[in-house]
Amino acid sequence: MSFWQKVALFYFAALLGAASLNYIPGVTDENGVAFGVFALDIFDDSLHLVSALWALAAAWLSKRAAWLFLVIFGALYLGDGLLGLATGSGYLDFGIFNNGVLDLPFTFKVMANLPHIALGGGALLASLRRDKHQ
Image (cartoon, rainbow, N blue to C red):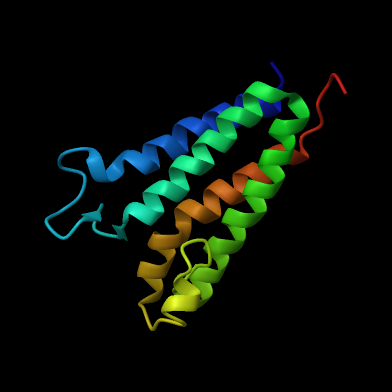
């Protein structure tokens, strides 16, 4: 198994974890907010689940598929996180289209968008690593 396939498997697990947050007792408060920051709905859960399944399929298919997942997923999630940091709304959940630019405290925007920035940036960085067996 290549490095990229192993990283894609990590993303499968991480995204599956994100998709399950609403269903683990004690993670969300009475308003459905996880960790005091994320208000994840069924659309967010579905996005994370589909992304997790994409990562799993890519890891299973081939080294090339895993690399392609890391590049595309990385660009999409990093872009979403950076837009959310700048505007308070991302595009993956259609927030920028539905809510427009939100006047939120900067610290909140950082906390809310850090997972997408970290996951997207990490995927892109991993995709840059040369495979020893190319």
